[in-house]
Length: 274
Image (cartoon, rainbow, N blue to C red; front, side, top):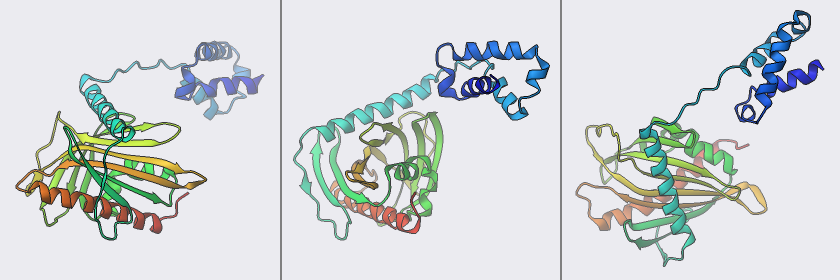
């Protein structure tokens, strides 16, 4: 009986189990009955008693603020826009990118202008790449020399971030971006989307031009027959702002995609993936 009581109360200590109908009520009743039986309660280890106490704590009904909801909805809209591009046929033209380590193509779409698509296979599981590109986003400058700074400004939700990214010096000058990033997970793939955050924005650092990410979407799919590898598809459309001609932007962006994939591949080779 004691073992069953412990399992019940410990189960309610997990957030996703606490919401099961009737489970918390049953655990609370058990705790009340145990409170009158000091002999039985004394047989339960202190660490388990703490978990049992947690199961009776009132749950905070915290609703996202209107600002956080705006970021979340912005991320969801960007995801739907990316899915529409991925699911509909378009005339993709190959881009000549030397030593890309990926296939890069582009097309022109209303509202986005030139959209670039990079496709490659990386020798790493989907979960590991997801952590590198979303959970450990702030560590990216340590392996991607094209970035000098990445900071998570806000976390509006578990799958939504607001980030500030600053590029390193380059032939087109330094740029910074304030982005809403959103993650969506399905059985078939993980989608990491980004778009310019149009709400609260910090000022651009001195010497930087504030650029815009119209749309970025990285799709991570397990390689059929080999779960240790991931098929990566990356959609990208940006406005670098400043005095850069569109022709230069259209030349730079596929190069940036190729360089990013190259740096990520080197990072993978230097770290053992689980």
